[in-house]
Image 1: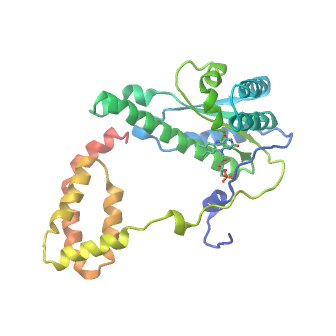
Image 2: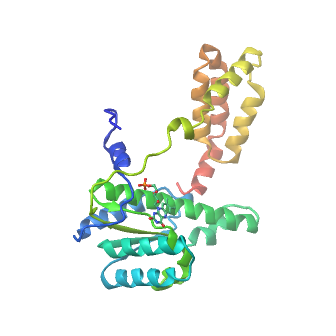
Image 3: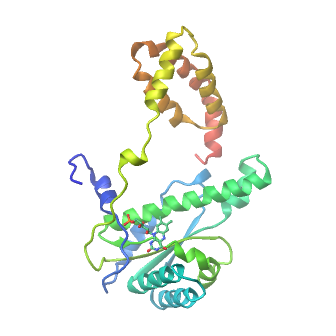
Length: 282
Ligand SMILES: Cc1cc2nc3c(=O)[nH]c(=O)nc-3n(C[C@H](O)[C@H](O)[C@H](O)COP(=O)(O)O)c2cc1C
């Protein structure tokens, strides 16, 4: 897609696609370091940075490919074929980076949030997975920006314990294994679904409902404001408020009263917000 409004970051995002076969050409250590640094700069739940990156090269990489090939025979098709394809990508790439979750957020999560233990385990595990996924995506984007190809190999999750054992990691959870190298051939990635298909806009409805509140002469914007208040009470929901306030802009001058009321609510919650932000790791 040719779009002159694309800046450098967006061009790189557009240019990223999975690469599964690589040139027999080494990747400079400085580039690998830059990629790792980009991964490490990802957002993370409670700023726990509960990820670990394992750089696998040379003999250890060959052993990993052998392990995956060997284990593939324990699975029926198509997982066995996908595992073997993963092994070929691992062999072909000069370097592989594994991403794993350390478990630190899961271990300390209950100290940060007073929620039931059962809920906490599921909640914080999900937060760890999401944080590491953000790091993995940063990694893929950084590799693309440096002219390198990469592919997220999730299928190794089928043999996750064996993979972590081979890395000498007794704790933590498998997240992804990512071969990196110069692409063997220049190819485009698969087409993505259209935005029309995957996006639903709710802002028009929000604007209309705000208009109804204003037009019904409810000065304080009643329940809508209460909803915002409760959202703020639940944590740092700044983005939600911003979006809704922007949506209110669409209803014109009548929204000023609502906007003022929202500002009042948000200002009154500044103290609570900073408490919440400190829990979130700021
Ligand atoms: C969580 C996850 C797991 C994936 N696992 C594999 C995998 O095991 N093997 C593989 O070849 N590609 C894997 N991929 C890459 C996807 O197949 C690929 O992203 C998708 O086909 C879209 O293509 P693109 O990356 O070129 O846009 C995985 C991607 C994600 C996000």
